Length: 284
Image 1 (tube, rainbow, N blue to C red):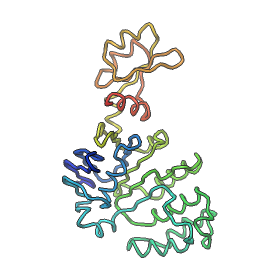
Image 2 (cartoon, helix red, strand yellow):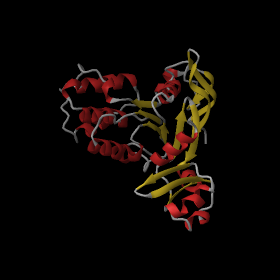
Image 3 (spheres, rainbow, N blue to C red):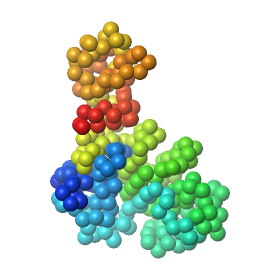
Image 4 (cartoon, one colour):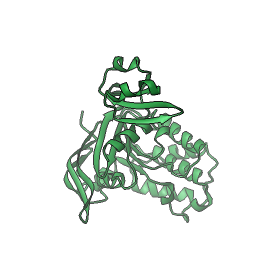
């Protein structure tokens, strides 16, 4: 099966500083990938390269195409949502449908109208008259009505309350995603998307420091919660990270048999946020 994204030695510099630093990456179809990193890590620059919005060095193919020289053809197969502030405030809801229809030949207007009929969004309303949650609903209705193979979400729920965020991702899974589509999501609210992810990528200072499926994360990483009495024995096993909470010591281990840890305390698979903190700390 051909990769949706295939990158080798991909780099992008601003002055002397690498925003993307010799990245090798391959993403297969039918995956939901979390691209996670701190501010300034290179997430947005990597997405811009993938979308053909910035020049780069190295090799990059997206859906088999060079995003620099084949961007028009590529955009027929890609949908993109950034922070909801990108829609101009003066445009009316019905006009956004016209704009998207003019850009995407695969846009289904009737499907979009069906999605919007389930909301309280008036077709004559201007974007500036909508709440941020309604704008997110509009964005999603437009995107879900495009028959695109690849969806890029760059902080799509930034600033939304928890109910809108939950509804956004639920609708995305129920009405859009299938095995023929691929989604990349960047977000700082990793705890809200980890249950939908198939793959996890951590990026720091332009470099990929973790590229694993969620199955590999469950297999390769173990979190141990133990008492102070067993902390010394746990440290001897060379954990990646150690924290304390309510008098308990919490250790993160990689590639160590779970049987070696069970006698020391309670073990579990770490959540994405804890794994992020541990690995990013290790790579500072």
